[in-house]
Length: 342
Image (cartoon, rainbow, N blue to C red; front, side):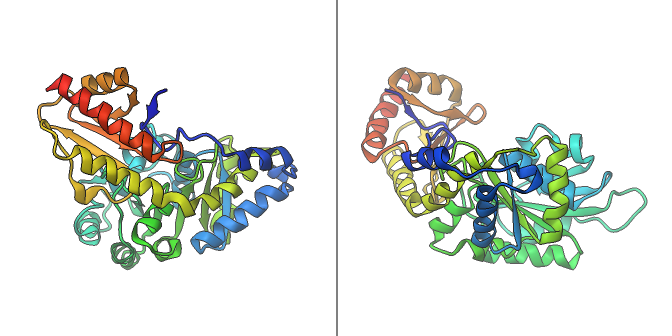
């Protein structure tokens, strides 16, 4: 049986989720009559310390609804050059919101506040107005690294000095909180809005939540509808989301398993792993001579699935459906694949 380390999106619903889905009390959510959806939104808002939340089909839709709600056509948003918003959402910010994305190299690493401030241009007839700073936590392309509450606070305060809103792509914010043994609210308080996924490490089959002030969510609800995200008897999905919120308590297992992977592979010839970046449930292998796609194929032949990130990097992601024993088997399989390559 293949050991799937491509992403924490590949998890299967738990038996508790399937039972909750089968028994869910439902109504038409576009009319705001689905009690299970409303309960999920209330619990999600409480988790991240915001007034209200909105249930959406995906994290990408959540981010894009947030951008549309915070901005007007012709505005500019600032994001890390390697962020999900800038690089992995099909150019939706320009396509849907009509905004320009101004990217900053390594915005989420180093002095985030200073790098952001240097990119904010003064008011000028030639420049679009900057309306939004987008942060990401954990940072996917950074290897699942955590933006600390302190750094988030500095970035938030820098944005407020410029009267710019802050949106947090918190797809894996629960991993960040567990990774630092902090409350989720310690991170999310430094944002005007936050999106977090139920369908990644929390194992729900579908869904994300967007949270913010009540007036923000009222506006966001219309954009969700415009994008086709107005679901009807969505309580069937929200029931799984409620169970997913309980899965936060086991995320430390995924982090420990990622550490096992990293420490057992770090000394292999031909690859490099920055152990300081293994902070949550992701491990990035950097191949000194390239050939990531070829190594992914060797790994697959040996029974391990992974994703390449360009020519020289491979990402491994631990999750609920990969046990410690399977992680240990994966280590052996990956070592064999690397021997074939080098």
